[in-house]
Image (tube, rainbow, N blue to C red):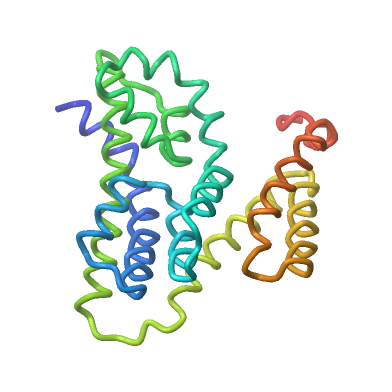
Length: 231
């Protein structure tokens, strides 16, 4: 099928990213005491990338379902804006519409925005296969990591730092890529303030809420600082 080969070609770089991050997630979940089927199912039904890495320490620390839900919303709220631009395209895809919403991650979004479809290619089928392959890459990586954690005997102390390392790379990338440093400074001040005020167990949710409100208020100066990216 031409559409499948086209989707595979355009998602192959994502395979390696999802493979290694998925393996880290699988090992983290295994180390927390979860089984291979449950870990694999969580990646299939949740498919939230960075949120899945965050939810492991939250679950092991006994965080409430409300805390998990709020954290999932704040971490993945950007996907709402991603989806707005694809409502018309996805809505005409019939039964695939809900699946396209579920699988619209950062990486899938970037591919769908930039991909140049070949002539006489079924674009809806190709887009669906791009989303499906990205999803399966993540599930496969999680499965490999879960199996490694269950069946390979090695010292996994320190593996939980993979989540911290992942977010540090994201922060460094954001710092280098964008002109305005206000989002970073806002997050840093809010996090430090609430950490000192509420302690490490309760500071995260208030930090996220305050950051969201602050960034809405600071939207105009941030946009002014960014200016035209093509200048």
